[in-house]
Image (cartoon, rainbow, N blue to C red; front, side):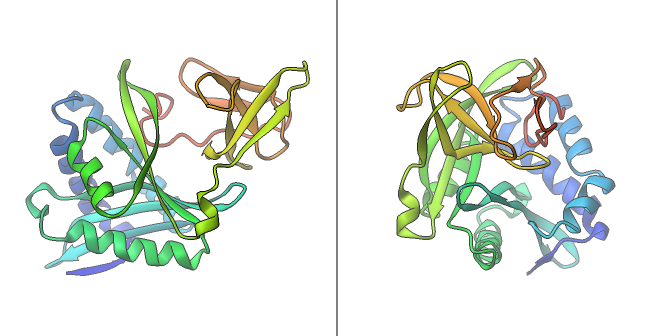
Length: 251
């Protein structure tokens, strides 16, 4: 088996692995049409081509006998520190248990460390027990949870982190005051990608129990608009959220 950079020639294999893996991991919780729609949009040729030319994207495939049997997709994101976000790591259902995921993750971590990331993050729905077990067995730590809506149904998504430097274990929470005088707390270790910079999650309490919204990482504005579909835009600099994973705006 060979682990290498993905190319546009791998798109058919990537889509087959993605569909099979998602169906095996989430078929008990998600409708088939949601899974099929996600694969069609996430892994069309144009989207994959954009990722392959992005210097801050690492997209690896595991190939055996000329066939794609797994892939890993990640992004390097500059927050207060540099973070490697694993968007997806999929293995064909009939190849699970053979170490394909281990080999992909090892190669991906090596690539991300070359970007000088301070930690590596992975997200997985709690409904995917095999996925949560995988991260825990790979020495990732469960550091948080959030609720996401998929097909109008709520699901718990877990965030796992592996810290590359001891000082990166510090939780980056900063107190700020909004223009209307409200005391809020910015979580610099929680963000979503934007076209001009990340959007950091903002809470009303240091314990992160009550959400306030977002602050723009590009211009530091709290004037953030978000619609019912999950689309996020900064009203001051027009920074816009990049839809990823289970975003309703993407599906």
